[in-house]
Length: 295
Image (cartoon, rainbow, N blue to C red):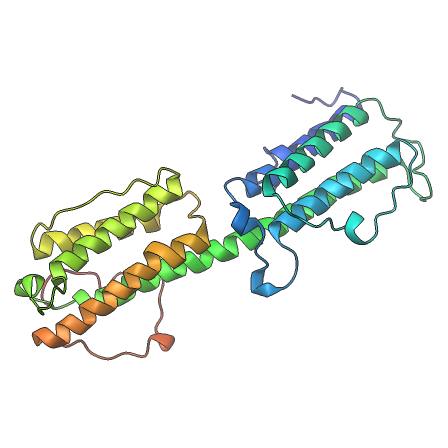
């Protein structure tokens, strides 16, 4: 624990550790926001523009390294790729920023904070506070970029719930065993598979990836189990990732099967009402359509 009686060098070291590793007042530090980011996610540029998470991480590393070099007497002018290194290996990028932070921490302990930085009109005290602020700034960018992918995923999951609510509301119990023929799954089997998919989403998010095969229980029980599985995903407070893979896999699969349910309703003689989904107000909090009974 840093106290007011300790030297300023140790206070700066404390702030640098908090910015890189965690326990900062502002929220997640650099290594907290990159935790769990896959190599594929790290290379994504939101909207195809700007910098990827990997590039932002390497940029932070470059400036931590530059601060160490400047303290050692090297002006360390960063231009082009020196400023924004080209990524390649996400594990290597994370290790580079970790090593850069540790090397700088070792230097800060004994640095003369009043000494001028080579070629600059400021001292080491200003330099070190600046590189800490720089680390926090780009950590915030990474957090926003990571959450943007996850935010879209969570909205897609809410859209599955909304559309499933439309497809299931008002369907009588006998709909669960409707047979369209030709090997097409019954509605009960489809709803059971939806429960399997969202149970799998949760397992993937937790890092286990276990798939559990479920048996049909009867229409109302199957529907109730699906809603419970979906609600568990929506209530999950951890990170839902990798977002892109969850979207392209189980969530997209779920949308396909909800569409099949809608088609089977018409074939079974229980057609749904039409709706402009573009204009729909969809969120995880809107669950009024979630019912297994007659409306």
